[in-house]
Amino acid sequence: QAKQLGRNCVVAYRDEFGAQASERLALVSQLRDALQTGQFALVFQLQFDHRRQPVGMEALLRWRHPERGLLTPDAFIAVCEDSGLIVPIGRWVLREAARHHQILVAHGWGHLRIAVNVSAAQFQQGLVEDVLSVMQAFALPAGILELELTESVVMASPDAVIRDMATLRDAGACIAIDDFGTGYSSLAYLKRLPLHRVKLDRSFVRDLGRDPDDEAICDAILRMAQRLGLCTTAEGVETDLQWEWLSTHGCEELQGYLFARPMPFEDVLALLEAPGTP
Ligand code: C2E
Ligand code: MG
Ligand code: MG
Ligand code: MG
Image (tube, rainbow, N blue to C red; front, side):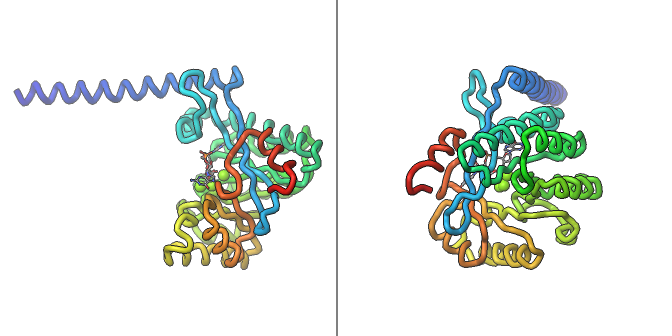
């Protein structure tokens, strides 16, 4: 009886495992199709200075899935990274972001920065060449294209990433550390990294004005960034209380639902051109 039960368990486990693996395989092939048939899209979230003037926007990837509707990256980005598909997809994101910047230029908003998220695999597979060729092809001036990478991207292979970051900086790209404070990184790296900006993770921003521990963490990160000569952006700003706290504590730029949600590019343009707003 026990033996029978044990065997069933193994079978059940194997089926479960097999189902997950084949689901993943199906997803990978759907993602490959998605890239070929133009199912990916970018939405853009405006970023503002402390006086609520627009300073840039972050490009965020979406997948218009034929059956499941519009998907956010949490549903597919990990599989893109594991399968290596993030390399061609990331290349598409870069070009698409640069193309939209040209439209901004045509509308007199060419001074706005455009930020793109990049994964570790992209660094390992020709990110520097991709960025340089996009900057040249779209005549992006220095200081316009910003690359957002997390601490884990740096820690994956610090020496190689630091070298590539320096090349990118010298070519006129800006580098931001995304979700700062949530990863495993050594503070010692901060002084070695050719960085422009630190983005305060929204998990610390959420309870500003309410939780003294989160306030201590944000205050420390903001002061350290200032002392190191880095710009700061807060993510996930949703309330006036958070905005006020961040402004009085020297956070230079803000991003969050309070100011603008991620939206299609046409809506960003409409928002920029609306009289009196933003
Ligand atoms: P992230 O780079 O930290 O992007 C910020 C995320 O916070 C976005 O989620 C955005 O929609 C969300 N957000 C912005 N403001 C608020 C707010 O006020 N409140 C709350 N609750 N959320 C807010 P999204 O678009 O789902 O993207 C999730 C993550 O996926 C991004 O986090 C980034 O790590 C990754 N990602 C997005 N696009 C790309 C891409 O093109 N390439 C790569 N490699 N990763 C990407
Ligand atoms: Mg980001
Ligand atoms: Mg972030
Ligand atoms: Mg975040």
